[in-house]
Length: 158
Image (cartoon, rainbow, N blue to C red):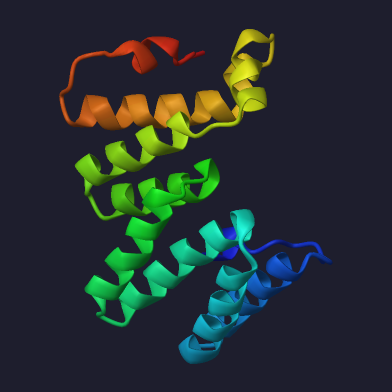
């Protein structure tokens, strides 16, 4: 997890506390303790579980355990949440895995809550989370030289 993913404000939610503790342990180089915190967050469920899966997969990749990392990503794919899927897409993009990024951006968009999609019909649509996912996916598709599709046509560019 990168420093920009660490929350600068205190949280009272147990999952958030565990995710923040894992981030601090990881930055300190204590990957075992980070994995312990993330495993506990995983047990709590909900969106924290999804963020924990992404962080666990990232650490396992760092530890040269790609099969274990792939297992956690498969679990996320089976129970997707938009923001964690976006994090995986961004990681794929950083690793020049554009096909992987496209798959994860598409999954993030497909699992957006209705209120996020509804923002596309407002004056603030260009600034919406849904539009940020659509434009990132569009950029990825352009990188892969793929033709426009319906979701690309929904992206709003300024």
